[in-house]
Amino acid sequence: MKAPVRQADRHVEAVLAALEVLECFLVKPSLTTIEIMQATGFTRNRVIRLAGTLMHSGFLMGGDGSGAFTIGPKVFALGKVFERNSIILALVRPILRDLALKTGESASFYVREGFERVVVAREEGTHSIRHAIAEGQRMDLHAGAAGKLILAYSPGEMVEIVLAKTGLPRRTAATIIDKAGFIKELESVRGRGYAVSVGERAADVCALAAPVFDHGHELAGALCLSGPISRLTPAIRKPYVKLLLAAARQLSRQLGWTAAVEEMRALPADDA
Image (tube, rainbow, N blue to C red; front, side, top):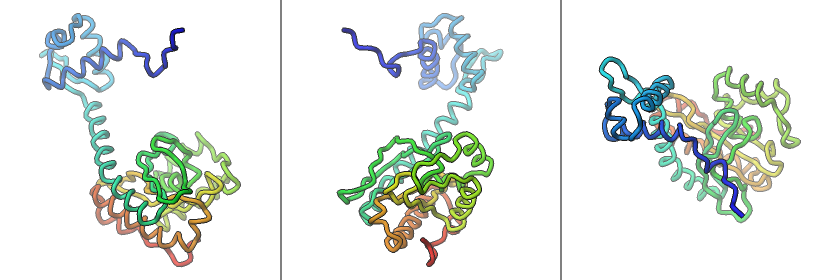
């Protein structure tokens, strides 16, 4: 019996053709319709249709009287995203390893994607019992330290959009499901410069998260430590928060963040 074809293995011919046109610009930065035809073997009409679609979407520019096309701003923007993420991952992994070794707890780096947060890098703790999540895993923004931190440092309109879209569904008995209480919690997170979650997403997990900023003074992501509540007691959390803030400060500086990072404060004496 023939195995079914997975959706991920299906290909859209028009998309493949458009990508083939874009790949022509890896060899030469400016190409005419005839040059694209020669490189791809496509007919003139097909090249014109594909190039017109790519221009409409911002992936190509040109096609004026000279008949030459060049790469458009959308390709440049995607390239900068790739460059930024590659740089961040190269810098964050050794920091995660250092945190995991110093604390024994699992260390993660989260970014926001749409209405969720995603684990983009992860270093497992050294304890046999640890918080088990995987790179690429998606989670709520409203439940858990990293999610709350990302929202706390997001523009107010983004918070409203996320809450309108997702609401505040209860994940455990400790999840904050009241909007007014949640907004107040975000204000507290910004006030102290880090977030704490005790059983909000998973009943037996405690997590700490600190903000990482880039050279444009924008939030690049959330650096997080997580482990069992039984191990991450209030007394243990105090020195761990200091380690986490120092690591977030180090990573932020590596990404070009300067004076504003000094606003991240150390753990207050009366923290929970």
